[in-house]
Image (cartoon, rainbow, N blue to C red; front, side):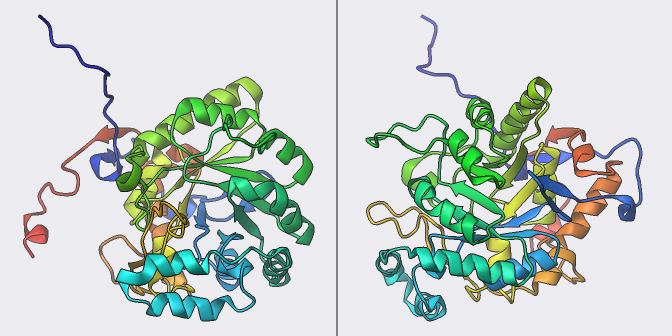
Amino acid sequence: MPRRLFKELERSYGFDEVAIVPGQVTINPDLTSTKMTIGNISLDIPVLASAMDGAVSPHFATLMHQMGGLGVLNAEGLYTRYEDPYSVLEEIMSIPQSEITEHLQQVYSEPIQEKLVAQRVQEIRESGATCAVSFTPQNTKRMSPVAVEAGADMVVVQSTVTTARHMSRSYRGLIFSEMVSSLKVPVVVGNCVTYSVAQELMETGIDGILVGVGPGAACTTREVVGVGVPQVTATLECAAAREDYFRRTGRYVTVITDGGIRTGGDLCKAIASGADGVMLGTPFAQAEEAPGRGYNWGMANPHPELPRGTRIKVGTKGTLQQILYGPTSKTDGTQNLIGALRVCMGMCGAYTVRDLHKAEMVVAPSIKTEGKYFQMSE
């Protein structure tokens, strides 16, 4: 009798299992353009800083703007719950690891204050920076108009898993199409990892989509609930949805790979997989200017019933300038991310980020170990 399976499993791939094939033509890195757009917002580099309290403060959002990227403020975080969030940050960094989750649950139980949402938005705008704020779906309807009225340029609606057809006990849940129409600013929604969900979300009129469930260094979703898809496969799926949607409608929705990116090589692979940009959390939490001073923790960490994250000590590795642009003496790919992207684009003959989408990729499980005997034996 033939052996049968209850369900067939497809192979999926993460960053360490694939490689980018060089192009037939190469160009000088200084001829490349790393620009990206989200709705009517244009950025010089395709990099967003994740809405994590240990990574992005109003001041750090300003620095990201000055570097050509975009810092997304967690508008449900410490900055909108406390008049003085920095003393609370100090507490979080001083608590022993064995007690940190309970402490985070406690400090994040304070209510979000509308006046602080508006105040933090105004702080960012007064510095001359583009202001992007992030909300979870349950608070978006109430809080996003407050942020936009205060001057927010972009709203990110973010949860561990987002779909266009969420079922709840609410009489009338969050309807993205209505939200896009009423806010009149670019709306980015996440997170998702499949073609079909990405397509349905794009149909609602959003401007960008975040790709990734559980890959972040501070996230434990994959361990706690077993849900997730490796980032290369997830990005390929959502990028395919973007291309089909664009061919059908003529409207381009930005795809942003969110999480799991540690090095310049990972960033390049995300874009070669079809991403228009990336969102980074822990790499920026390692910046000297980061509010967490070498610590980071996930947005789902303080969940009152099922925390899905942990505070991690990531250390301070360099300035934001070094992380994005160098100069650096590190050879592990964790600094000068934009320099790495430009060199990769040059090797692939890609003048633009969209050109890098055309680069060939191969499955390469030995790409990081082949010939590296002496590096691995140190």
